[in-house]
Image (tube, rainbow, N blue to C red):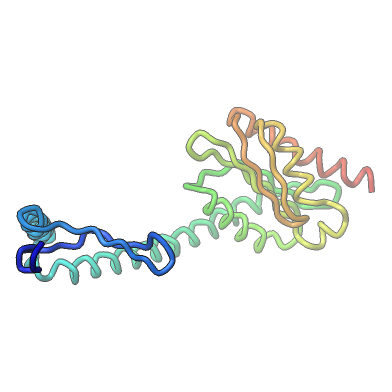
Length: 209
């Protein structure tokens, strides 16, 4: 161009680094730039109609929706914690005595692995001393969580050993620390067998101590 006035409308579409000290800017000019601006304006106006606010208030409304969503997520987590606490009490009442160790091995229904871990934490706090193994199926894939309280881990019962033995039943692998281990697998049909194996694994550990 002979002078910048010939460029007309100018809209930057992207900007980034291509080398040390070198920036690359991509832009539209002329009619394409005008079309881009009109398209953006139509988009913002459409959002305003969907949100039932003036297009100038769209950013404010979106931020309000995001904050509302975060508040709802916090409330969901709080309610999940309450449910986990109630369920942990039920599971503790089902604990079995295996060579003097309280063992809870149960199949539970949770939304994700995070829910499984949360329930395990609540159950460990309620059990005080013992072995916990929880199993669930999420998206057709089985998962196992093993927790061993410090006093029991000190007697040679390790979560990693328990989870590795149980994982064989779900065509999976797992591992972790003496007090916490996890496993995932491919065969959900073996989950009940995996949980049923926990008592025998605990007995075997004490037999070899």
